[in-house]
Length: 243
Image 1: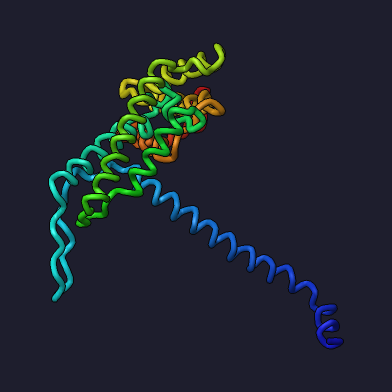
Image 2 (image 1 turned 180 degrees about the horizontal axis):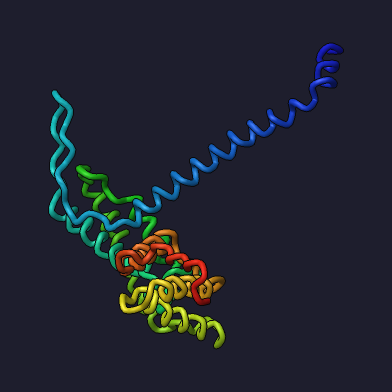
């Protein structure tokens, strides 16, 4: 014990790099989990494949499972249709600005819709899986609840629009919509569009939280509208030229 204390007394400084290495490993693990979670969220927000799809091949020597029924495929397609409608709000910044309640989980009707979505997602069959009659009834009921909850939330969001915001906040939302048009306008100069995009983010700060997916879609849209060579740095002014 004495030898250990003497060692620690002489080499106490080793605690700092060891601690740094430990925290680095912990942070790396946390970052990996965050990246994984974000990737899963993106995958969920991607346009879901249309109904159907062939069942996975059965292993050699096993009995092939029956193909999903037409009734099951219709329920899956109905769920996909609602999810596509939801994605129009999640991925379109203009719609998010126009109907902010659709992205606000604090709104009771939006929260109810998101809960119904979670239930339907949980009961959704995997590709190639055939639900039993009881499972299909439960899944169909969940998808019906999902459809109804979305319809109610959408109607209310379109009714209230930005009524939950103050006059100054509504003015900022209107400004953001106008700037968003400039940011994706091919007739605008690259500088005008970059400035407009920056201003959009500033106007929305604290009012509406754009999802990472919505930001990616918006930035790609702005970039696609930019003419070739728009991102090239300006030519340097020649020495002795007029200022």
